[in-house]
Amino acid sequence: MTTDPNVIAIRNFNRFYTRAIGTLEEHLLQSSLSLPEARVLYEIATRTQPTASEIAATLNLDLGYLSRLLRTFINRKLLTRKTSPTDARQSFLSLTKSGQKEFAVLNQRSNQQIDQMIAPFTGQQRTQLIQAMSTIETILSPSTTKPPFILRPHRPGDMGWVVQSHGLLYAREYGWDERFEALVARITADFIDNFDPARERCWIAERNGESIGSVFLVKDKKARTTARLRLLLVDPSARGLGLGRTLIRECTQFAHNVGYRKITLWTNSVLDAARHLYQAEGYHLISEETHHSFGKKLTGQTWELQL
Image 1 (cartoon, rainbow, N blue to C red):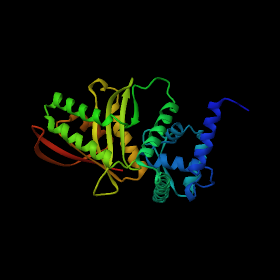
Image 2: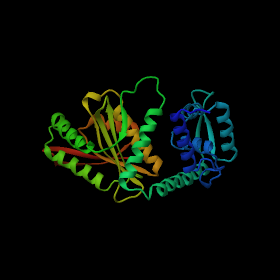
Image 3: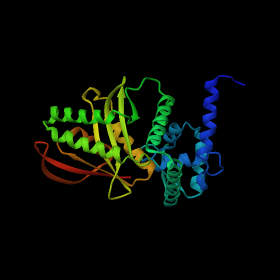
Image 4: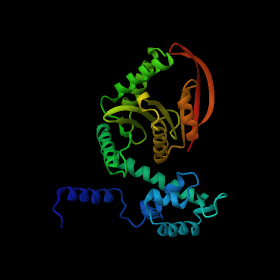
């Protein structure tokens, strides 16, 4: 038996966490699904017509084992296959109405489980927990090359950077005055004052220890099932790395995970690069209105993504 304290500590944590989230039970969260079945169901539910090969690669599953799981889903009328019109060797996977219902129940129970787990924690404890999990995920994520940036949760000092960076960039590139910086300051202050780590998130992108980007996903105050994407920023030095797309997708994935049904955002028509990123993610323009803000005549736009 090993005496390496690092190995022992990691194994102790693994045993603790699998017990804490109930993965040792025969069926996950009192559903009819095992843990592997639930993970496969989740990947199918949150993707657009994936193939079995994509699911196997994402979850590092043997294709033969995955095929058996998929046959089980089909026999239980949770899943359908549709042959690709361009390659008869491939089939697209999608959930039936029964499968969607099964996933919705499981997803809701998972959210409730986490809500109950973190309910006794203070805001600071929740932030520390999320930051620790993010650190573990970053270190253990497989990669053959060093990533061009990392994403992490916010920490003290980040809001000041977000405000200053927005103020400088938008003044330099669009001629907006200090009233925009004041708006960003109000948004970040509201985020910190009312932060709900179970349903809200800020991502800060770093490269070589320097902050190079940000995005926020916050609750809509009027609709519990709607989230708002705010304060997307990519520093000019980080353009071309795919950072903007990555930050937007992090918002989409997080919103899926916590049960939001829609994400909305407000932007201005002059922000061409951001608008193209939103369109690529599947956002649709809902409305436009002209306004005079930040010393400029602008066209505001509301965009929406159905989840």
